[in-house]
Amino acid sequence: MNARQPILTVLLVIFTTIAYSQVLPRESNFALGFSTGYNRGLGFQISATALRPLENLPVQIRLGIGLTSMDPGNSADARRIFINNATNGVPEEKARSFDYRLDFMLDSDFINSDDSKIVFGPRYSSFKANFKYVGGNENFDVTSKQVGLGLGYESQFKMSDKLSLLAAVGLDYFFNSTLTGHDTSYSPDNDNVNPRNDNANDNVQFTYKDANDAIKQPSLMPRVLIGVVYML
Image (cartoon, rainbow, N blue to C red; front, side, top):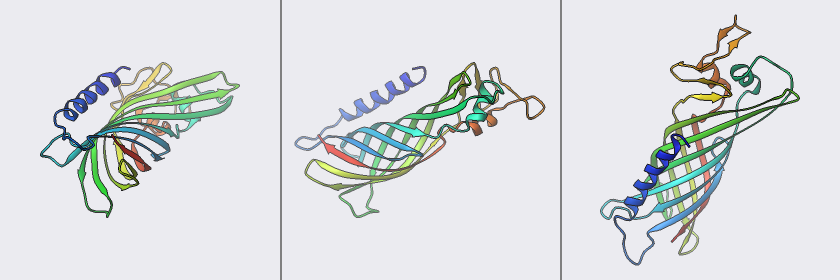
């Protein structure tokens, strides 16, 4: 939980307050969405959108949660940097990222569709990479919590009165954050905790750059998604 809970609480309060501040009768005021595609890996996202949160401004506000399967990084370097210099065992690795996003959506006519939007807003990522060495008695996670910003473009194509097809492209950027694994952590300012020694480089201590090069935590995250939107 840590930093994630208060951030999610703030985003939810903002979304709920604005969503209920202004509503128009006889029309859909909210929409639910589901999308999937490429997000530096296979990703899935669910979202809830306030279609008319502010009566006099042409903006929609969306709260979304996504899950992406990602490349965790270099298993041999991860072991050396976070655990020890052993080389035995067959490595198995996996990683996933939960991302939480608050989108502000402005009308755009760049593409001829039923509804197109420029999308931008803050992001938050909870990343975990797992490295297991079968026969080597090592199994550990490397985690990070990051904030970021995103920009994108979306178009909807009506399939029925309530249902639309969604096509979306975008790019999210997440700022570097502390990487923690086992009893070791590496921070962007190199205020590191229990860093390991690099036996291939005169036993100097590993730095944040070494850890960040080895572990593929979110940084630039291009997005190409397709999905559906249902008007409530």
